[in-house]
Length: 84
Image (cartoon, rainbow, N blue to C red; front, side, top):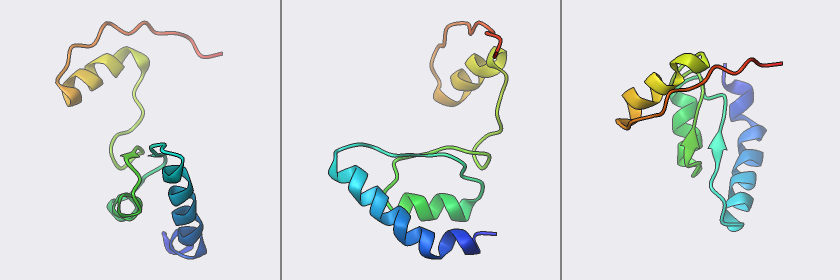
């Protein structure tokens, strides 16, 4: 599955990570789907990872519960806003 990801794309991603860090930005990687992918991008220096490996998408009505459960903080009630 990750063969294409692990080839030349890795080198390009590493250069992009270096460039973004040189600008003093932090990096969010979306679409992390496996432990292997999470480990590789974390080793490259990406600070924040998100994707199916960590959690599936949740409806906005349940988002506050999700955040409160995993961050141990009080979160105000989320209003369900229709997506156009």
